[in-house]
Image 1 (tube, helix red, strand yellow):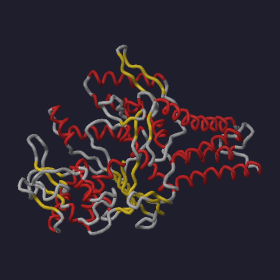
Image 2 (image 1 turned 180 degrees about the horizontal axis):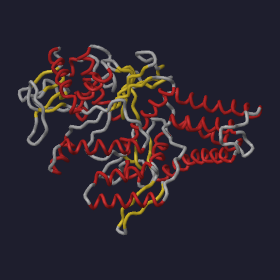
Image 3 (image 1 turned 180 degrees about the vertical axis):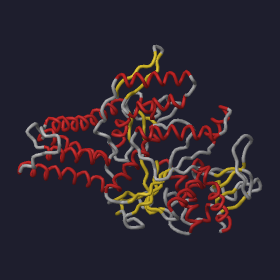
Image 4 (image 1 turned 90 degrees about the vertical axis):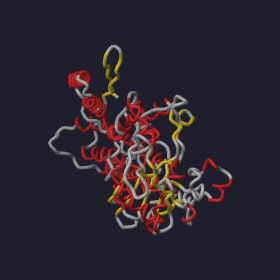
Length: 474
């Protein structure tokens, strides 16, 4: 298995620290709003990496955090007149709903930054003791960037170039720093902000220290894979390396994986441009399995362009696989002897199954080459075409089940649900909609949201209109 390592800028053979086990950390979202489709790309990509590794027999300890203390969270809390934890907990729950709808598995551990403050204080203290950090007069603690000789090795930036030519790349530049490149580990509280006691001041952690500490606590001082969006390479991941390796005096992560940006109609996504979409927005038009298929239709290191046309193409592609599985189920149900009796595979069918094995081999070959999901999906499509050509009412049960098993297994590695559950009856849908309306009237918005989520998970999309609630099947 080869992985492109941002650290070395080349593909490398994957060799885990401990045979059969993978320790993987993926930077999670800052929870101040519903997650957007840019957040969804790393979630889907690295969930697929994890699924493939588990398919290959690895035991994966997968840690992905929630940043639940941040300027944006505090700003929203002040606007609503509530504690910042109310905002973060609300959007952690909403994020989990969207992850479930995208079939993203929960992490082994989902740590929250606010629950790991003691570990952060401990690491900051260690960095001060080792001469890698210092406290300013106001209690702000800075990392002494030039004290870490390897700074810049991930982003391939030179310290002198950072300071000399391009001030936009500086981490920040307060007068009290020893060096403009030094970055914050701990900062004093402002009026109305949450804070924690520390030896330096009442305050809160800098963003970078949070991930270093959570990774160390749940995975250990050295890990196999650290991953996230390419926007995190500098300064976040660069600073994580500096902190972790300066404190622990060990290499931090062996392999660094980064997914490329997602653009909207060939433009960067932003609220000001009016092309900002949350995952929840997309769910009102498409089954989120289509979004997942779309995200995997390009290599994770390639920029991905989101558009209505490309989503329609993804919808067609995804439903081709679903339809193939439905046809196989129809053929299986048509065979007499549903009590388990099945004719043995004929000689011709054995040869066909050997041929079908070739598509599995193609799938594996694509995934082993830096998780090329685009080519892996192409291999599934070849298998679908093969099944459509060779499966018929004259086929034996064992043959049909073997073909179905191959398609479902490969799709599941990609996190694609291609065997749909039985559709809900209209009466069941209407009953849940009525219950949701009653919950909203009683201001029980949590239950109302829960019902929307239940229906969405079963492929039912709700739309609140002036005329009342309308629904459709995804």
